[in-house]
Amino acid sequence: MLRYYGAIPLITKSYALNDDYKVKRATYEECVNFIIKDCEESFNLLKDKTMLKGQTNSLAALALKSRVLLYAASDLHDVPTAKAKSIVISGYANPEFLGYLTGDRNARWKAAQDAAKAVMDVGKGYKLNLSEKESVDDGRNNYKSIAMGGGSKAPGIDIAAASELIFARYFIDRSDLRYGRANGPNGYHNWAGNTPIGLLVDDYEMIDGTKFSWTNTAQKSAPYENRDPRFYATVLYDGAGWKPRDKVSGGIDSANQVQTGEYDLIEDGKKSVLKGSIPEVVLLKTGTEAGLAIIPINLSIRIRIL
Image (cartoon, rainbow, N blue to C red; front, side, top):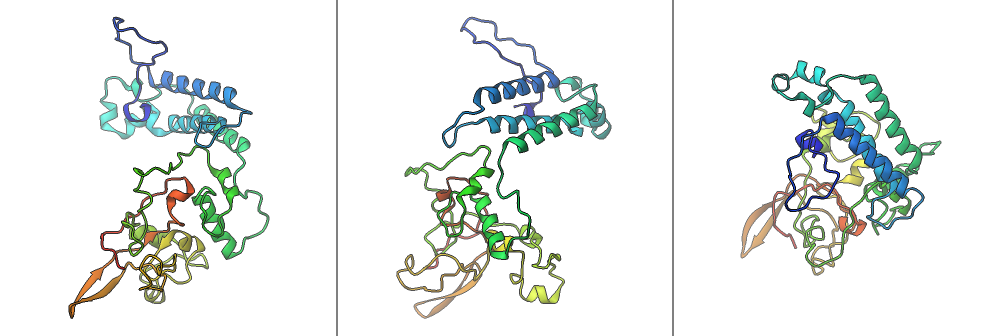
């Protein structure tokens, strides 16, 4: 609420039906201090306790504190700075609802830095102690393992990557939560719910660390070759190998490749062209098997190629 609405009333008691509900709106600084106090108290209550998956833990309390202090230290919530950059804010009658009117900005940045360091000190992280470069295959598996929170049953996924999760909402296997199950590429009885924009795909560098460019003739002729291993761990492009398709196609298609390009369909002697879309994000097994939500990347059509 603080992010969306600015300062809000701070309610610290329960109200009866006949009570007066008029409460003075707190300042932005008061709201930040209130949240930080709650986070610190939560950490002290939760530390050294083993929580079930999906429950808030002490690290989550520290992480929330870190994020709140980071936002609070930013230009957006330093009113003198914000006024100089925004006509709207400079004309607002109650800037105390939006940020700090005075105070030491360096001290606020230092508080944000210390809070972030506290999260890093308490959290374990995943493979933060590497002393040498990983192989391409290991690097790709590390990347996938972190993305899936160590929870996928796909080959190569390391369950230890769950140490990267600070606070997670897990998938519950119920019949009415079918959207994640059907969120895969076309040709697999899925709805092909996600596609990345071309700019994201292009941002993945070449294997040698150079930038990918469509103006490079060699790269343009083979845009999905010799890319950063993380590209192949993230993007399913036309012709990319994936799960076996023979089982879902009734033995018709044994290519086991993602189809997002153009394909000729011949029915009753007439040919029509089925157009796919740009590459779609890799869902290992299905994203829901990892117990996590992943960023949807949509396919533009709903045709199932069997």
